[in-house]
Length: 288
Image (cartoon, rainbow, N blue to C red; front, top):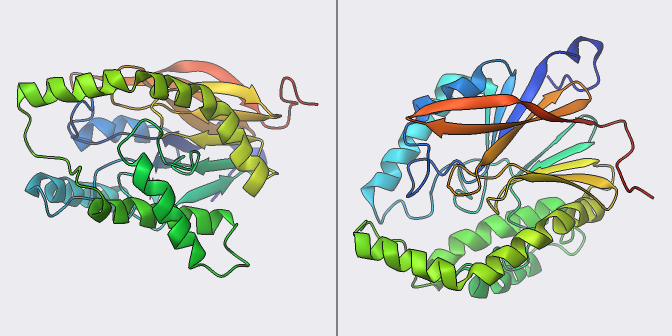
């Protein structure tokens, strides 16, 4: 039940949203799913907003399949209290690509359609746009420009890229391989920073195009936590459990969004106090 706007919801956390956990992936602070149990202390539902896990390469390394099975067991344990949404690393982990809360005033989606090339700094960029355009062309003309069709095409594209690109992730964790990945990331730093700068505006533009009634858009994907008042809306990014920028979570409490920073230390999740409250019924700074 969505408690947004109900009289009983003033102090009830109806939803808690996090993203980009990248469970057990290289660099992620989330090494064990039991670490995430602290997230369920309080809210009626917890939302994993994409990139919870890697599902694209299950046949390439047995570890991927093991992690997937662990997540499925974790999901079954929490039942309706846990909503697992898709991202670009786990496009087939569920059938939920977006959520709308509080009478449509809150839009939640991973953010993999913020950029037409998925991530301008990644190897996927040269393949994603072409495959997404090809997939959308197969949709009926009357639905091609809808949010649902765009998200379906994005999920298909990231699965198809596995066969379009030779850049498969390898199981090796040799120190020299990690150093090489770091050096390649340094070479892309200008594109990464440029993408971070564009993200707030692109997030607001997503709502303008597909859900104009949305006053707050909650996304992940770029691993840069923050909140911005832009284009008359709140653009919120929950960051990532992969360093260095950190992560935050969003609690939906009645008609307010409560923002908290959170981290994992020694396999223990630590959730900080509320550092920002957003009233969904108040005017957004700078709104015309």
